[in-house]
Length: 226
Image (cartoon, rainbow, N blue to C red; front, side):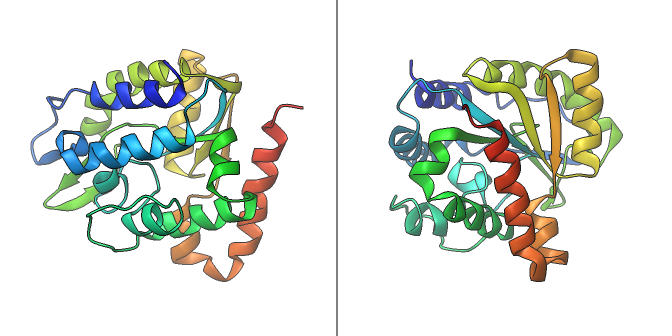
């Protein structure tokens, strides 16, 4: 299988029966025919090769981005307008996706970016509590319950092909703190390097967006094969 086929097989094989603490619900878009079609089109377009990629790891999928399209940090608008993949989803922007596609465009566009980079999440499935997005680290019981899944599924994705065994962590706070400690215990990556989370940039530092785009580009370019 090529890289894209491995990604599709991985997501389609994710179990939907995770046991979660009371009050939490699992986001599981991979049983939806429209989501699977969008993913097949996207990964077939950009990942139909065996090149290793630089891994960028967010937190976990949210309701309005990957929780709809199945593609990390790609909302329905960017899937159609930036990637040229028509889709039936409600065309609403997701803040993190806006910033990520600014980075992608600055890199040279989706073809150039995805040739070198694979975006995923520390935790491959997302969560809600009372209908609101929830991160895996927001509750200690939730974090403990999903950690075995996190380790297993990171290992599976690393096997797709990871450039230089270094991961870029999207989030310099709790996501990085958790992944850094986990990596020290498991040795999944040679190194984990933190970057500001796209949503944090858009919510609190939007006027400095250009500065953070440059930071992302610098970290990615440093990992490109010579």
